[in-house]
Image 1 (tube, rainbow, N blue to C red):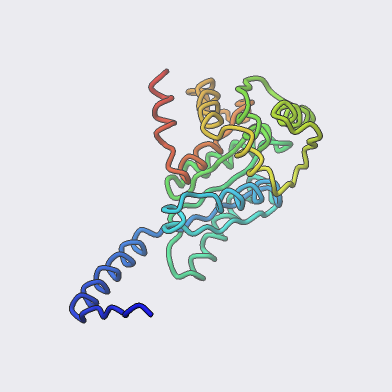
Image 2 (tube, rainbow, N blue to C red):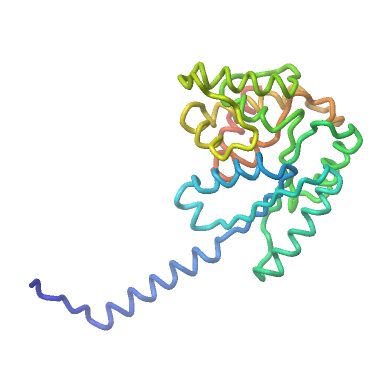
Length: 240
């Protein structure tokens, strides 16, 4: 049996102080996110999978609460703020960032614009990752740049087409799939999606009628922030 090495008390105490200071630093950097989604399954499933794939350092400093509400765009913003207050009371800490995720879909132009403007008025405490027309646009941008409006039926057809071209010959898109994030990670390109989304946003510079920004998505902002990929956005900005 190997002889056990006894660590002198003064060295052990020094190590304990260093370790205590390290843990204190990690704790002080911890950030709390609340992500509230309009959809009850599709978007929450995507972000739950994404959460589990964050880099090790991010996992140490972030805590996430992901809620799906099924509300329309106007009531969603109010509901998200109420959820933030509720979580803050439960964890006895402030929520560092509230993100609201919603689509244009069949909502009225006025309702859609009002929701975005309400979030912008609360910035930077509240931010929104909206999409016009549907969240599936974010999936498609992992494969190609699309700059024309797409119907919901076309979203499904194009998603299936893209995955089949990547080798998944029998793939059928399921809207509330829990596997979409992992499939995109395996067969597509997240950084490419971010660049494509930034490129789309450039089409509507100076236009504040967001209901006409079709196609367009701000989901890239949330994903880039979570993965620390803001430099991709900045690099792309410099090209214009």
